[in-house]
Image (tube, rainbow, N blue to C red; front, top):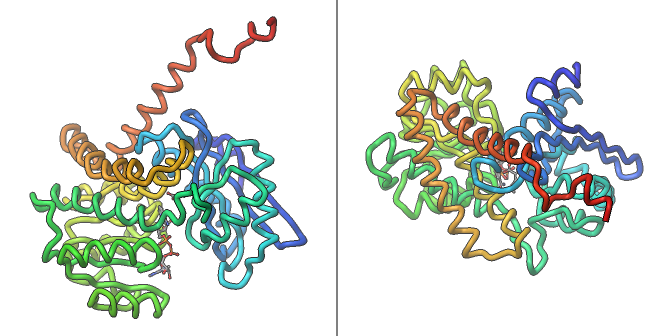
Amino acid sequence: MKIFNDMEKYDYEQLVFCQDKHSGLKAIIAIHDTTLGPALGGTRMWTYKTEEAAIEDALRLARGMTYKNAAAGLDLGGGKTVIIGNPKTDKNPEMFRAFGRFIQGLNGRYITAEDVGTTEEDMDLIHLETDYVTGTSGANSSGNPSPVTAYGVYKGMKAAAKEAFGDDSLEGKTIAVQGVGNVAYNLCKHLNNEGAKLIVTDINKEAVRLAVESFGAEAVDPDDIYDVDCDIYAPCALGATINDDTLKRLKAKVVAGSANNQLKEARHGDMLHEMGIVYAPDYVINSGGVINVADELQGYNEERALKKVETIYHTLGRVFEISKRDQIPSYIAADRMAEERIAMKKQSRSQFLLNEHHILSRRS
Ligand SMILES: NC(=O)C1=CN([C@@H]2O[C@H](COP(=O)(O)OP(=O)(O)OC[C@H]3O[C@@H](n4cnc5c(N)ncnc54)[C@H](O)[C@@H]3O)[C@@H](O)[C@H]2O)C=CC1
Ligand SMILES: CC(C)CC(=O)C(=O)O
């Protein structure tokens, strides 16, 4: 793996390797772009097969956060951490404290939050060492972001349904949900309340049992989820599930779910477009969590945060409009929106401003 080549390809700013022998911490913090502000993105703990796979995941996820935060209108850049290890067996408090000290060492360039494999309790441990963490259990914190991410995905799915079916109601629609973890369990609640029919799968049998019991969902084996008759496919586990194999099998008219990096490669987004499947770009539809934790940075106000999360419906509406107007796939329309925001900020930075810290201020 040629790390600088990979960093240069998408212009990554910084890659930080954190090792602590005492606790067993092996973490990689990737900071993609801080044009809009400090990099905010969660910490994923996962059993990566190789170190290269962990680095690749950190880089891909961090870049996704740059686009997510930009498209959501947040003054934040993109970053993400992966911790190498099994979240069920390899965690210990010292590991998260050591990680917190590494974050503190970045002096605010990176702010963390939860992601797959980490919890509110882990954020509390990080918080013992640094303030650059969100989603803790503290009184002024926004807590676990997953239910709010789910709310945003629900609103975004309605926008995608409107685009595909001409009506945003999900009543009577059959929705195939892949992975019923923290986000998707909460998503299923909203979908069930609206009268959708749910087909679920997960590699964790307990998660499936809970969804079947709570929402009367039909359960299928993990690999069968791509073949079921459904209106909407909701990928809510890990990434890259839109690929050459699954595209041949999907029957849905809409792809709308919480997973990050749903397209294995960009060309799979082109293929969705050509097949007439409405794709809600992953980083737009799943931005509810980051919108919620980002609200903490100005003193958390739940009502304000949820109002902002609801704008995902309109943001996606705009993405679909641009897609139709310019005859481009929705993922490209979303990328353009995000890139325009970053480019505008870069341009404004190029103009000298007397009220900023500058070389003349050293004279006084
Ligand atoms: N938690 C949050 O607020 C946010 C989460 N996301 C993304 O949404 C996705 C889900 O996140 P969470 O619900 O927090 O994670 P989670 O770990 O609670 O849930 C993921 C579920 O997917 C299942 N799973 C893993 N591989 C599978 C497979 N091959 N087939 C079926 N099920 C499988 C797991 O067993 C687990 O139950 C992730 O991609 C995450 O990055 C994105 C934005 C925010
Ligand atoms: C979990 C969120 C708060 C941040 C993040 O990492 C994401 O949106 O993927």
